[in-house]
Length: 210
Image (cartoon, rainbow, N blue to C red):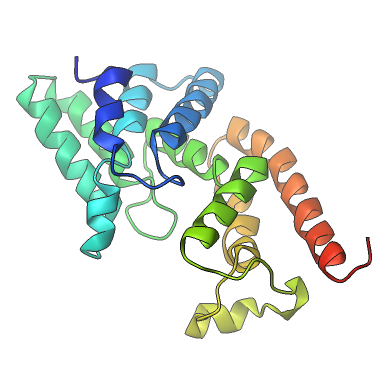
């Protein structure tokens, strides 16, 4: 069955450790929790979550929007399986709208649930682990001084010396403000505090203060 975990798992065999099927399962657990709390349609949320990063590795190689690529694939799959058109459209929108950096914005509750769950997996202890896993895979330095990172300069010109600390300052530290659901924001508050404490302690340890 195309909506099963077993079917979806095979679609992520080429994914990196940051966006592999473990990521999908973590987001699914969060999405189901948020959907229950917010009263979202669970089947829409589950389907969109299972497929939201489908084709990400190939899209990044071609410099394409991976959310748009996944949405196109999901639409073709679900239509070919004969699912009802309105439901397919709701799943496709949720997949297309899950990115932090690009449009469209999530317009439905189900899309907002997926957006929040996906962003929650990028913060807290798991988010820290993912940032350092990505940094290691891309030969980034382990550390940069928190207070030396100029956010406005980065937004205007970028930075060729990106580190996991940069990722925290320029993206992860701002994710909690971008969430849509009450349940998502509640989860984000504790995860955000944990990140702040970790990166401040990392700064102190590197400086030999702790």
